[in-house]
Image 1 (cartoon, helix red, strand yellow):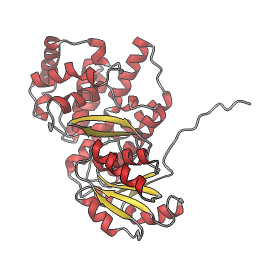
Image 2 (spheres, one colour):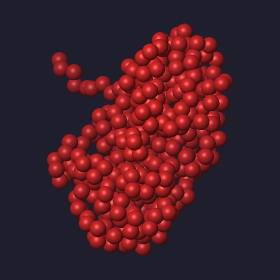
Image 3 (cartoon, one colour):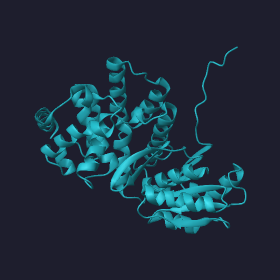
Image 4 (spheres, one colour):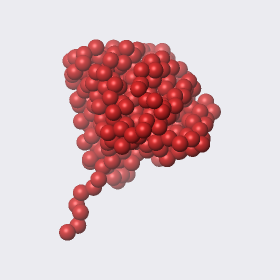
Length: 349
């Protein structure tokens, strides 16, 4: 009888809650990741260093990271290959975890993600977003073998980071709509399992009326970010969580670096792309959620002029040449993009 199912890769363990980091040493031993604690630990600035100091890992070697780019990750991988380690533990925010995922993939080691913030869906994803010579790119990596989110540390993170996680998760709904558009127009195959994960993640957050200071909300947000990572792992690409909204995000990062955080850009851009597709119901839901969490919605909220945002809209398709979204479908030139952005700002500003 043929096997009529498929295997979806997931982390061995996902632990979300208060005080979870205290279970790191037992986890490494119980899961046979490193029974002797021979691990390298890479920590980011701030809370990552504090957590590393509290770990009871006698044989661990701790390294500090600042920039978090491809060059630093490659150097870390070189050091890992020169030593004898059972695993790499990344402790910190998204930049640190992405660096650790990339370095672990280059060196062939399992990686444990210990998240101190909930800014975007990189917690459990097979994608690392890293800067290389001033430009940010996305790189395929192995997903973490274990994911830990300690809410005690998440609560101490900048509230803007937690809000950013909201924007990143709810943008899944716009990404899915763009994928369905590609299916209708180009015959692109849509992975229904990946869509299920991505949509479940987004809908678990978009209509909630509690917020980033509530335990139940933070648990739901952490689970949603992990589910988004699993959606990407299932699809074998970022497609279920990245559509025209993320194309605009990457264009803004390139044209106007330092404008806003990843999730803030994703949320605002997803509202714009939903409006472009004339999906009024989706746009209304996204708009209400962005308002509820005091997230940017229109170019002015991001500190951009309408002309700058329109410039990013025109540039956006160049960031993902193989991807078909509402932006590729409409093929907006400079004048048309500015006209659409102005109409959008008038509607939601």
